[in-house]
Image 1 (tube, helix red, strand yellow):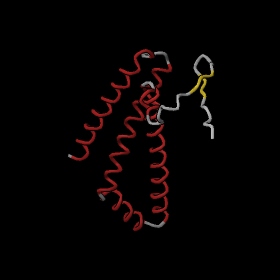
Image 2 (cartoon, helix red, strand yellow; image 1 turned 90 degrees about the vertical axis):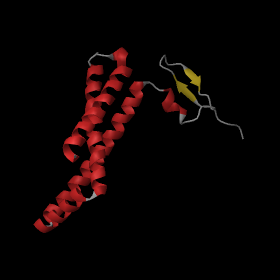
Image 3 (tube, one colour; image 1 turned 180 degrees about the vertical axis):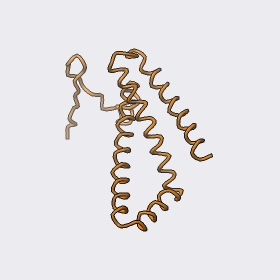
Image 4 (cartoon, one colour; image 1 turned 45 degrees about the horizontal axis):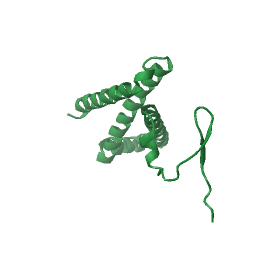
Length: 140
């Protein structure tokens, strides 16, 4: 059976063959820093949305079940090591999502367009610094 050729459209609107030897995993490595930052932003946004929906559902249901049920859910969520790990993941997601959002606004306004790699590295360093600072304040 004959293999079907894949095509893509380039930025100058030309139709070109896609090399079938390029593995799908290699695609992320070939993309720009802006594309990687876009991917991080989308993943953190979806993660935060899922957390928010689960949080509202859990706490809202417990709130309507009465004071004792609410206190029980509260104790489990805030004293269980598994949920504390999830809280750390949410904290990291909020930090990187918000800093990357600021980066996006700056780039959309025309600032640092040619220096996106350095700007993304800066927000990653800031995110780590803010995360460590908040972790120390909250847990140590």
